[in-house]
Length: 198
Image 1 (spheres, rainbow, N blue to C red):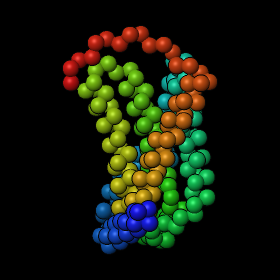
Image 2 (tube, rainbow, N blue to C red):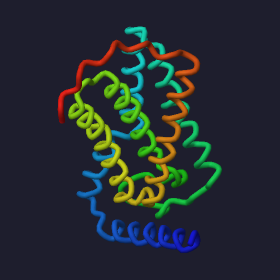
Image 3 (tube, one colour):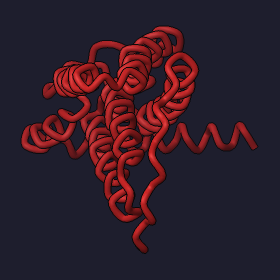
């Protein structure tokens, strides 16, 4: 059963990579590169720095520590896994982007999942109404999915690279929140107002 599942995933990876590679053009690659931007180092680094400064200014030490565990720690995990697994990219060269480095897990996807995931959890903890919580989670999931799709469509990663990056990031977020909670307990929240009906 496991061998059959691995074979299916391998076939999915190969078929998807071949299809997108055959249909990639200069115009579409430009759009896809823009779609990758929410997970690029500059964007994620800026968001992390801004959030860190804000939390320090507000003296939200628990959130600041969580952010520190989640982002720098998570990207270090990404590099360790990449070097350990040594998975080659679907294609070794592309006229539209630099394809250096290893393929699994996708750094863009992992960075996006970490930053938007941690911010979504903080946002949900402050939102009282259910439908606004759903909107916050959807707003966080959208850029992650857009980045993941763009990395596959550009030929930079296989489907399992981006799926693995999201799974690894979610696991790391759980660890980050747990570690921060043990070191700096979260402040006790006042009793929430009665939630509005969805």
